Every structure is written in C-alpha cells, then in structure tokens.
Amino acid sequence: MKVAISGKMIVPLMRLLVTFISFLVLGTLAASAQSREDIVLTGGPALRFLEHGKAASHDFYWFNFIDASVIRLKELKDQAKPDEQVTWVVYRPGYVSRSHEMEMDLLPQIKAKAQQVGVNLVWFDTKEELISYFNKGLDRDKTKIASFDYFGHSNKACFLFDYSNTIDTMSITFLHVRDLKKIDSDDFSSHAACKSWGCHSGEMYSQWWKSHFNFPMIGAIGKTDFSHGGEPVLSNSDGKWTQ
Amino acid sequence: MDSFLSHYMSRFLVIPGLLLGAWIFSSSQLPAQTETEPVYTAPVGAPPPVAPPVRKGSPLDHLTNDVKLATPTVGYKEGNTNAPDYWVAHRFVDDMGGSGWGWVKKKGDGWGSAKWVALQENPGLAVAPYRKLLLHDADNNWEYKFWGSIAAYKAYDPHLDEMVPVFILQGYEVVGSANPLNIKTGPSDRVRHRPSGASSRNSRPILTDPGID
Image (cartoon, rainbow over the protein chains, first blue to last red):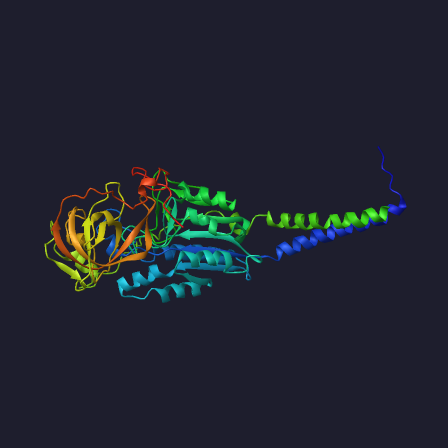
C-alpha cells in the first residue's frame, strides 16, 4: 500500500516532527539538570564497658565504622563531578558516649575527617532526624540520592545505630525494615546504587528495601568484619554479598 | 484538515516527548554503578587498631580489674539509694535468649503489675549488679531494691526482634535470693508473636511484629 504525501502535508508534518524533537530535547535537558547526592550513613560504636568480657566483643577500635566510611567517601568524592554532593550522615550520640568513656572528644576528629575528604557532614540524633534528612534534607525534586552506603551494626531486620552503646546488646535508635515505608522512594534516583556493609543485611533487609524502593540494596549473608580498620570484609566462610 | 490534525497531534506528542526524554536519561547507569566493588586490603605488617589503655579508676578499669564474686553481697548498695520510693526488682535470665534483665514493680505493688525490662546502666553511678559477679547469670532469681525510672522509649532487642521497656538505673541495694516468679517472661506483647525469621541468630526463637511504630 502506498501512502501519498501531498505537497500541502509536508509543512505540517515537518512542524510536527520539529515539535516532537524539541520536547524530546527539552525533556532530556530537564532531567539532566537534576543533580545527585551520594549518602554514606554511619552508626555509632559500642561502649567497651558494655562489651567487656563477651566472647564476641565489638568495637575495640572506636573508629572502625568511621574509617571504613571515609574510604568509601573518598571513592565517591573522586567519582563525583564538582557540583555533585557527597554527604556523610553520622549518628552523633554514639560518638558522644564513646568520647565520654574514652575521655577524648571524638567529634572534632570526625569533623576534621569530613573536611579533609571535602564532604558535607550531617549529624543525626534520632531516627526521625535521619528519615527527615532522606525526605527533606535537600530538595528531592531537584537532588536525588544516587548512592547509599551504610556502615554500622545491624541484624537482618534492622540498622542498629547505638548497639551496646546505650543498653547492653540492645539499641534505642535504629532503622527497622518496617521504618522503610517512612522514606519516600522518590528521594532516590531510579537506579540508585545501595549497599549495607553491616552484618546480615542481605538476609532480609535487602529484600524489604527492594520491595519498597524498587531497586536493590546489596547486603551481606552472614557477618562482616570491620576489625581490620578499613572497608569491612565478609567474615563467614560461607558468607556472600547479595541483593 | 491537515493543519487541524498536525496542530492537535503536536500537542498530544508534547507529554510523551517529555516522558521519553526523562526516561532516556534516568534509565542510564550512574557513575557509582559502573565502578567495580572496592576491596579493602589491610596494610602489610600494620597491627589492627585497638582500644586505648584503660584509665585507672574508670568504670571500665573497675569492671576489668576488681575481684569478682560468686553471688551478690546482701545489703550492698550502689548509686543513689536515698529516695524513699523505690522499685522491687527480680532478676531473671530470659530462657528465650533475649537481653532483658528481669521484672520490676513499684514498692507495695503485687508482681502481677511487674514489667519486664531492659536495664539502662549508668557507668560511674550504678550498673547491673551482675557486673560484680563471675557470671552474668549468677544472680538469677535474686531480688534488689532499684532506684530509677521507666524510660519513655523502648529498646530493640536484635536477638528476638522485639521491643522491651527500659528501666534507667540510678541506684540499687541487694535484698537477697528469692523463689522463682510464676509470671510470663518477656515483654507483655511477646505472646502475640509468631516466628518471622527476623533475628540474625538462627538457633534462637524468632518473633515477629516487634511493635515498632
């Protein structure tokens, strides 16, 4: 079947094509104008007093989570364009109480590390403050979270920001899988790269994360070991990363 | 007619055009995804970081170096114990593996009103009585007078995936050993739980609906 295009139709068709291409370009430009933020979330260490004498005693080194976070922050900062934001969100009370125990103020050291790497440091004291930062810390219509990393204590269902820091082997500030619904999935870009470096996250948290946000979060099957002082490694022989 | 069609069709194409443009951009990979996963290599020969030396006289020094007892000393007091109102506390080790400390009730009340609690210690003021003992469960079924208060918040027990009321300890006095109590162990809503697999310890009983929110 032949379709005849008369001379009269060429001009309107050209206008139609130009309009379509114009809006395609404009739409692409509008989307590309959206900026990105990389977030590293860091929980607090246990108190040595509360961990003393345990067979599996946590956090001899007070900056195990901090040092691991700094390594990741440097990687993100190296990848980031000058106008892209890299943000370090740190649970302050955990380091206040460890400072008190050690009689050494750790907070200025954390601030100095953030300054050295050139990232924006955001403290949080409560779960509500953390969730508020996700949802409203920046204008999420303009700035999407493009990557998320968590360094801290966790079990399969929960990020534990003050494990054995306030109460022996327990936590009063945590982000349970049931709390994920309070974080707007539109805060993130659609293919955000997310990873929990804590223990057991791949056994449940990753599944809830994907179900809520519709993109994966890598997590560990088994425990992770921060005691080397750098990025954590899987400590179980049968451990693995999953999502 | 042609002009009419092209006029309206061009408007119809505005929205798909915008959506298509946004989709093309947003579905492309972001820089962080294209990087290979970093692997940390410990510096050769460098020792792992350790805790600083314990200061003499600090709570951690006492915990580490004081002589430990087999059982509590009746009449021993620690912390602020002068207020006339106190709680009666019964230590019980949770046979389900939870980290709760035991029950507390107000002086004069029956054990039916007792709360299962986690203990928030105050190093330097008053800490769990078992810190003075050889074993943390050596005071199972011992009773104490407790000074302090129930916190406004609850603690999350990662071993059982449940929420536990918190008692903030300001002081205590050892009363003595007591008969076991015939009341339910654990937080009041434990009975409603069903296994969910939320705990990281596969060998432990697992509870669901930890009451978060």
